[in-house]
Image 1: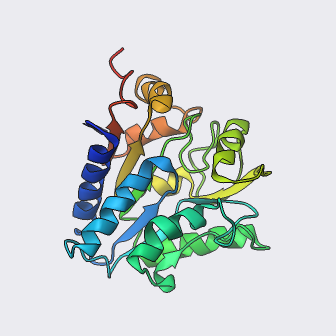
Image 2: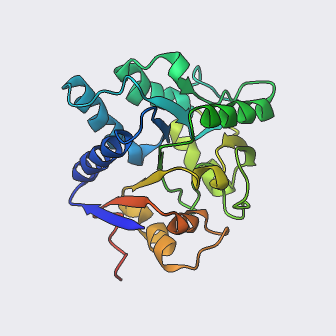
Length: 242
């Protein structure tokens, strides 16, 4: 796994956006997996700037969601889709038929999983997966202890994630389940970009790169991927050599 440390969050985000675009340009019908959250937000901002400046053409891109809270969808402020609409899909004017996103309000959540798997297969797999890192080492909603063999599935949300997730909502929410691409699905992506920012993530970053590879710390599994690049700002990287 390659590690790239930016001098600032902005510098890290711009470099991550540059690499994402470069990778996506290798594919005829590229499919990008998009994670919501604070860390990837800067990457999306720079991607939008590139498109608006006519430096990048994303008209042929397809988009797949990484995860969503059960019981939430694009109509809910705080949902994963709510944030990605505002950071990415609306500014880029992405057509709905090019987006496959989990509907956490659907009556059949397993059906949402099947829909995502079919979309990925139809588009010849994920070209680039953009993911963040949870405070407990989760990737998407693959919480500690989740079998690495799981594909897209309905997940039980770890108490730490439930607590951290409250920051996205104006009022306290019950968020005990979610829908997520599984680690087995993500590990089949041609390229993975892990984006992590902030001093509050420094300790979990240290663990991801120092502990043995294990389902107990899902992000360590990315070290087995043939082409995964981690982008860190200086705060998130501050404990790597301590």
